[in-house]
Image (cartoon, rainbow, N blue to C red; front, side, top):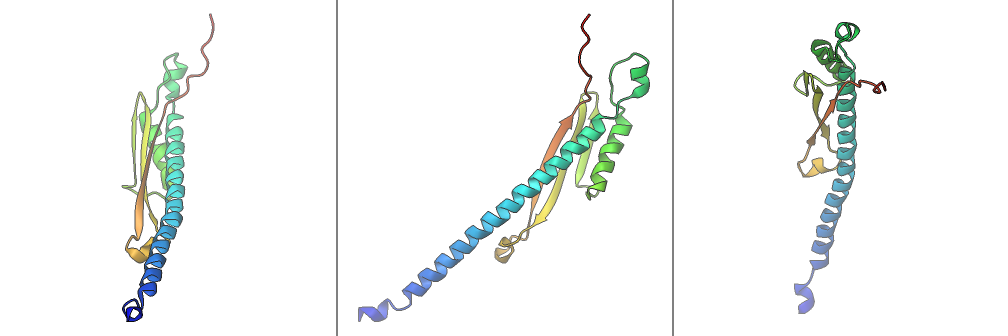
Length: 140
């Protein structure tokens, strides 16, 4: 009699374990995709901020003044770089002042496996700041 009561319990266990393993595989694969997407967005933010920080006000510098960022040129260069990389309006922000160029970037990435359980995409964000390099100090 006991055998009839336990009938199908192995099937339930196997189905449960298959679901758990599938979700774990989804976390591994989609987690790797998330890390890759985060690194790509961080690299793009860094390069955009560097492109902006490279926009030194040459007239001020040639006149013997300080190294200052041309704020309009820096913002345009950073935005142009991000546009060429495929980011649209609202996916990035650029802030420029005398302290440097700050860039924030966000993007979404589709999931490969977790879409089956309702997670279709996730958002990745990164930011970077760059300042113009003044060069080595001259000894008197």
